[in-house]
Length: 542
Ligand SMILES: [Zn+2]
Image (cartoon, rainbow, N blue to C red; front, side):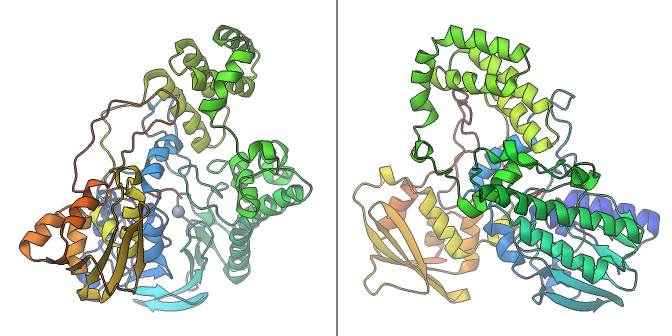
C-alpha cells in the first residue's frame, strides 16, 4: 500500500507522488490517511487521488474522529483576522534575505497552489483502532485536543514504524499559534505522547512525523519522545506552579524557565512555538487574559492613553532621543515601550516610526522562533512602507467552503452584519434545505442576527427553501442568491425584500486592515456576491 500525506496543494502533492513513483517504482494509491485537521495535511488530496475513486469506495480516505468539522471549525469565525495575522506569523510578504524571511519554522514556506478537501470515508472513532488496508496493518491512536482538535498517530506493527502525525516534531510546537486559534492543551499533548511512548515507542525502529525528518533506532526514538513529552508537561506544570504563586500572564514569559536538560535538547528548542508566547498561553487557558490588577481590567485603548504618555515624557523629540540611546545600549524592548506610545499618539511621526521599526527588527533578529521573528519584522516593514499592496486577497477553496455547515455559514453572516447600518429593521426568516432535511430560524432583532437549527417559526416574514447543494453554489460565489431565486432553485414565500435588506448590510472583510497605527493602504474593495464566503482562515503549520 502507498500512503501519501497529501500536503498543502494539489500541484505539490502530485509532484511528490511522481517523485516517489520515479525512484521507488510506479505504484497506485490505494488509501489516504489524514493525520489531522490542519490545511497543510489534506489540502493536496486532489493531487494524489481521484475524488471519483473515493466516492465509489475504491480508495478509502481515513481520518480521525471529528476531522471534517474541525477542518473548518477553527477557521470560520475569525478567518479574515487569522489570514491577516498569518502575514505576520509567516512573514509571507518579507523579502527572502538574512534581514527578512529566512524560515517559517516547521517548513520553508507554505506551498502556493490549489487547495482542496476530499471528505473522509472512514472515521477512526475509538481511542485505539486497528485497520488492515491492502495487507498493511495500521493501529490508530486518536489524540484529540493536541496539536489539532482532530488528530491521530498511526503505528505500523509489521514494520515497527511509528507515524507521530504532527504531535512530535523537531521543536516545541505552538500552544498558542500567533495567527490566532483557541489555546491548546499542553498537558493533554504531553499525555498523548506518553501514551504513544508506552504503546508503540518502546518497540519502534523508526518514527516519522510531519514537517521533520525520520528518527531511526529505538533508543533515539524513546529519547525524542521523552524530550517532547517532558517539554509540554513542564510547560504546563512549570507555568501553573508559578501562576499558583501569583505570577501573572503579564510576567510569566519573563519568569518561567525551561529546565536546562531540555534547553540543551534540540527537540525541545523554540524553532516553532516560543517559550514566551507558549507560557503566556498556558495561563490564558486556565485563568484568561486578566492578571488580577484592576489597572489592566478595563485599560484605555493604546490610542487613548498614548497622547498623555507622550506629553508627560516631554514630547516626541524627547522620546526619540531617549529611544536612540536605548537602541544603542541594546535595550530594545525598553525602546519599544516608549516608541510604541509615540507611534500611537502621532502615527505620522516619521522618525518615531522608523526607530520603532529599528527596535522591532533588533528584537526580531534575536528570536529563535521564526513566528516571533517574522511578526516583529513584518510590523517593521509596515511601519516603514505601509501595508504592502498588490497582494491578492486569499481566497478560500470551494471544497473548504462546502465543508461549512449551514449553521456555521449563518453564524458567520451574523458576524458580517454591520449592525450600525441595520436601523430598526427586524425580521423572522425560515430557511429550509430539503435535500439534507435541515431547517433554521433566522431572526434579525436588536440589530443582531441569530440562527437556530432544527426549529421553524410559525409566523415567519419569509421562508426560503433551497437545496443545500444549491446553497453551496452561492456560498462559494458561483451563483448569486438572486440568480437562484430567478432560476427557481430558491423558492421564496413571504416578503422577498428581506434578502435584499440583509445583503445590503453584510460587510465583506478585507485582509488588509492596519495592525500598526497609520499603515492603512487605500485598498479598493473587491466586489463579490454578498452571500458568498471567502474568509475561511488557513491553519497551515498549526
Ligand atoms: Zn498541524
